[in-house]
Image (cartoon, rainbow, N blue to C red):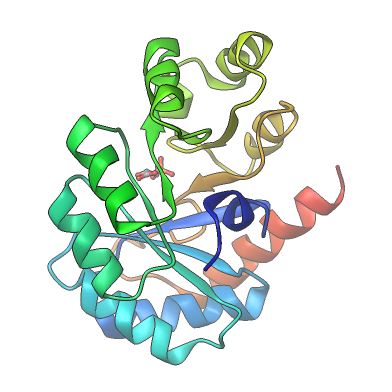
Length: 211
Ligand code: 3PG
């Protein structure tokens, strides 16, 4: 079993993915994997999300780490564990969810957007946090301020991050990786172009090598 800290350290970017079908999920995750991505957050926002997670797990090599995103409740945490997810991510945290993921021993990245939420999560034992929605909650400047008072916390900021702003977040000492959906844009017909996905993923990975 991997810890959420280990998951965060596996790459400079975690794609946040929302798929319409298991078939779409397999194609896009394969393209991301071929570009060098090893950690995948598949959000539980579509009915087919759990099927998509199982299909991607079956398709990709064993070094691919598949997690569930948008884990809003104890029930979804249990469903994610049952589907074989290596980790879970939530935009926020409630007492019930904190209790459930601990009981399930599920590596978990809860979301916070304020100092008090970060302190509450820390009291519950979570020191690796998602900062969401990052771009409208203070961006890198907020994370720098948090780092000065809570230096033991590490972050994966997500929400509104693009190729052009990822480096500003990674420059903050507490930021281990960033998350976002910008690697998998949908065209006007609603489809995800695999060549574009590969290009964006390669760009994101090489941009972080340059820092
Ligand atoms: C998430 O769940 O983390 C966000 O939907 C990702 O945010 P983005 O779509 O703005 O990258």
